[in-house]
Image (cartoon, rainbow, N blue to C red):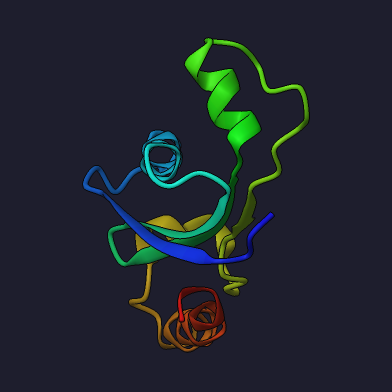
Amino acid sequence: MDEDYIRLVQEDKRYRSSDEAEPQLMDLGIRTVPSKVFAGIVMSGTAPTFYKIPVTEELLDAISCAQHPPNQIVVDKLVPPVPHLHSYMSDGMIPLENRRIVIQCLEAFKQFVG
């Protein structure tokens, strides 16, 4: 698979849960160029969650036929390892320690988006 990356950002305006923003982000990736790894971020308020989404011809073929792909698709997800993970979605980057950790994650994420 070609290891080129394309950037995707999905804003979740509800701020409560990223559960519905994730499928929206995957859909953005699937509707674009096949056989790529998409680097994506879902923003729930000020709380980013990071993704690497592989999209292959095999996956696109399965989706176009409304079938499951023959091989498992693994999407990598990173929720920044903040001290109080249970309140991360509501606190986001308000606590200074969260901000420091999120900035470190953003710096590391840059390798996937050029």
